[in-house]
Length: 224
Image (cartoon, rainbow, N blue to C red; front, side, top):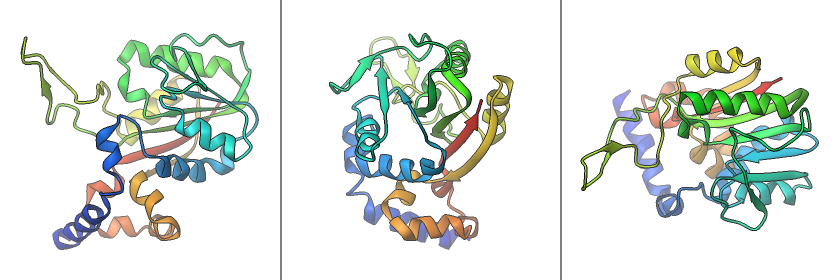
C-alpha cells in the first residue's frame, strides 16, 4: 500500500507545474472551479450567491454557463465582486436558491462560523442548497508561519477550523441543513484529469491507495 501511495504522489508531482499558480495566489486555478461546477451541476438552480468570491473565478465560470450569480468578498479582487461579509449578509430572507462557500468556512472562528451559517440559512429559499468545499481533516497546526516580531504562530493562509466529515455534518445539521451529498476527494486531481478523474472516484479507486492526498478535500451539498 505504501508503494501505491508513493506512485500517486509522483503522478501528482508530475502535474503540479499546472498547479503552480496556486502557490502564487490564495485562490484556486480556473480549472478547479470548473471541476467544482461539474460536481455541483445537478444541485444548482436559480439565483446564486458566492460568498468569499475573491478574484471572481467561480462567478465568471458560472456566468459562462448561463447562470445568474452574485459574488461578495471582504477583499474583492474583481469588478464583478462586491464588498460583503458572509457573517452579515445584506440580502432579504429567502432570496437565493443556491449559495457557494468555496474554501471559506475554515477561515472563520467558531463565532464567525455560526454567524455565517445562520445568515446563509436565512437568505436561502425553502429547499435552497448550500454547496461547500473545505479541507478534509487538515492539521492546521502543522508547518505554521511564525511572526518574526512577536513569535506568534498562525496558519499560512489563515485557517482556523479543522473539519472532519463527522464534525462538519454535525455543525451543518445543528444549523438546520440536511446533507444531500458529501464526497472526499482531491479537487485538483478530479478536475485536472477530466473523465479519468471522474471515473477514478466513481469506481472508488482512491480506497486502494494509501494516499491521504487523494481525499484532502470535502465537497458537500446540503439543503435548507
